[in-house]
Image 1: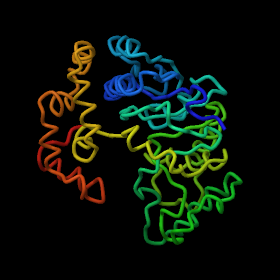
Image 2: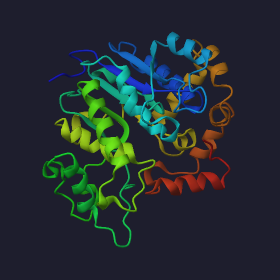
Image 3: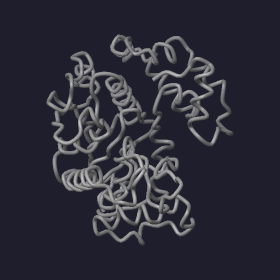
Image 4: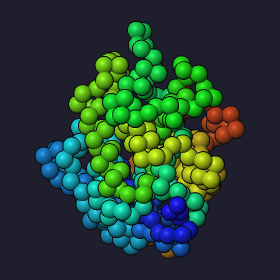
Length: 335
């Protein structure tokens, strides 16, 4: 079993010009702050210009330089299958930028490191992914064949036995019975092998969806639809209690700054605001984030605290859309 603590691993995130450039800086800075002894590498994968991007997606020079100062390595990758038409496909194609055979943890850039990520006991031989998700796909509708038929068709497409992936605590009509993840983090032993299956499964379902998927949207859900198939095919499954620090005391997948202030932990808010005040970091970080309106308003101008006061973290709305609506009504919804 290959675990953190017995060997280094690579952390992979994808960033490009725009919102992700700012998020990548916060990810790198929080890693340095919370896990200064991390033995692996933080790799920021950067899509390159090409026919699948209408413009130049590369990072600005200032962001690239600051990422290097924070200890991150920026590696290029080519979009050959997705690109601007489906940006979520970047997390699939970016896996090709990593050295094959070296264990990896993928993180969305909108993630803060709050604890010792190198001490999390990942079993890289048994891939898993984030369980912080809602029942966003498939969407029940009149005349559809049901969850069992939809997921059964996907597993059958690739010769996978769905039986071992089911959670028997839930009935056939409950979405939680079926292997479904948030793709905000996932890990594996070999990025080359993971990439090959992820790409094959995703392009197959995109180009020729099983008949049972009729009426189901695959944009933006394609990555989350096929990720369970990849993980199951590689011998993985739901994360065990030993990974409770992910989406917990070790990482926070915050999504958008208004959502961070609305629903995330005091530790996550303290990390964001601490980075803004850090005398060793703020002189370089502040100008690099200056053009990002959510940062200017939520953090610099202090409006995040107003957003936080709108919610009781012990009794949050069950659905994220309710949180978003309340933030919009208060003029605090920023992307």
